[in-house]
Length: 465
Image 1 (spheres, rainbow, N blue to C red):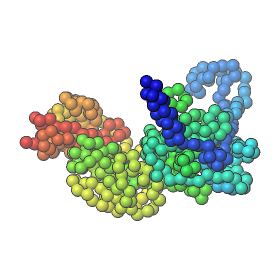
Image 2: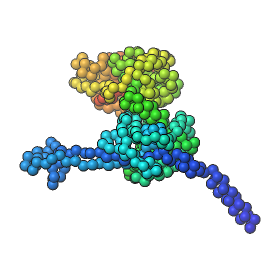
Image 3: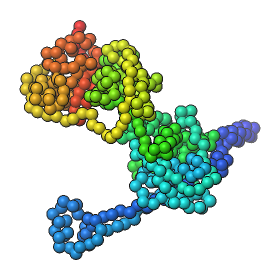
Image 4: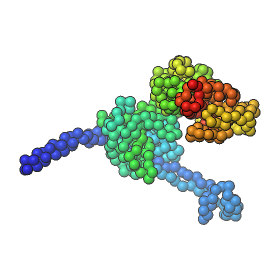
């Protein structure tokens, strides 16, 4: 019995030793790289000329606001100072610093504090809201600086380290692993975020994310939280994206991005089958802007973009990032999937100037009802409606029966079936007859301001024998 107890104890001892030996030691990394991380504090003067002292906040259009404004004593515009904290890191020994745009954008004053307690007033070089990257500068020389790493070489599960000033606590160190790569977040089309479980909190924003070599591979930017604090989901901007932005800001004070003028959507397995694609990959074109780069190159609705300038488009989220990173005016080759085969077109990349809406909303009365083989009650658009919607044809969904109700609703406009534009109910039903039973059919549908493909499966009583 004693021998067995001794054996178990020995095994546990060596297991603990092996476990401790396998854990990473961050001390040397922090000692060498921590001095390049800075604390950033900002001030902003808020002008409130609508404030009525002694009264609750009232919207400007409220009749009580107008009443009190007329009879209350005249007041001078109210001013208050707003302060915020964040982090950053030095990328050159002469004082250039990277941080987040949401940390310093719009600030009236920026103060940078180094680890040796020196403080400097910083100058704004520029910031880019689309990537949430900002470049500032302090007047100093001989400063410690970071070494950029390669985010593409990162592996999921790899150890990473964050240094920043959460809640104002300077040079706080937290560690975790890479949870995922290439994450797309809502309203963030141009950044393939690195997801980690390193603890990030307010004040960490703009700070560096290190790999175990001591190289910066990202800027800590966002967290997912229901409470406002850390919940295990943190997101960092890859350093190659940030450095490209900073180089442009340093050179010209602004960032230029490529644009081709298409609306796209994800290729689902059902849509891939309906278009004859071997696997669900690429970006499905659901709208082409007239006169845009894609239109001039001959790209059509229902094309699936597989490669852009030699870069593979695995999912639809890849395309905006690849296009945006391409210099406007560049001539590139685009590989498409069209009508069951691969095709290449040449395209000259345009430039993003402002946010444009590719599709306008239209309306109008409906007439000419009929029932399709999908169980849809459809109506043909008249000439006035086509002009208002700026389309050549289409069928309006009046009523939905059966399984199609999961995808379609009253008021949707069907513009195409597959890559065939729809001009009449008879043509639509004829096209459905050519699709084998049990197969998916791709419908190009307009709903309010959004045009996208949906896939519907024809049941065994519908379609071609």
